[in-house]
Amino acid sequence: MISKAPLGHFLSRNPFPNALTDGLFYREKMRAIHRVAPTAIDGPGRILEIGGGRSGMASILYPNAEVVNLDLDPELGNHQPDWARSTFVCGDACDLPFANDSFDVATLFDVLEHIEDDRSAAQEAVRVVRPGGYVLVSTPHAEWHYPYFRFMKPYCPHESELMQEWGHVRRGYRDPELAALFDSAPERRATFINPVTALFHDIAFSRLGRRRRKVLYALAAPITAVGYALHQRSTRGTETAFSWRK
Image 1: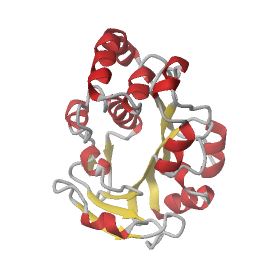
Image 2: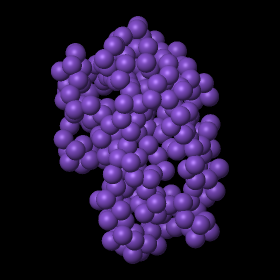
Image 3: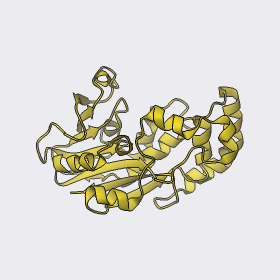
Image 4: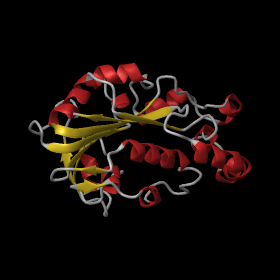
């Protein structure tokens, strides 16, 4: 059996520098993933982190698990975090090189919006998870846009630039679209980056210099802290985390 890390410990491993300002959006993502992830999972504790890149998220979420990190870029195998107890495999999310029912959990954290054949990726994740196991997903909502606040537009790159830089092939998903990919509604869902905390996300990816960003962060901090603290699973958010049980 593997157990989920306590929330405080999990959030403390946010890989972004300035985790409460530039990296607040990632902290929100981590909290949402923690909310949908099962507390404990029976079985040998094998997790497949599809498109895990350099993050090592699954190793932070389930510290006692055996993690396989699969990514299409072979260079990422040379840049795995020292603390992430994972094995790197170069492979395609749409044609996973693993047998059926090989893992207790498969994750697709901010991955599906980067894959043209997202249906195949979703079905492959389900295929390699054993009965009773889980598929965990995070992704932007289909109505996500950047910047969230219009007054930030003069200071931000156009969202098309960011989507190209990040390798998006689509903006995101509505809940029914994801349910169709996995042939069922998710067991759990939790949103993140709400209309209050979105300002920190706008600032983080803006063209503003560090000094001006710090001033804006300081001015917005009180209301942003309240928005973060009051955010519930179903609060309106620009991105969402989900879990499916096979």
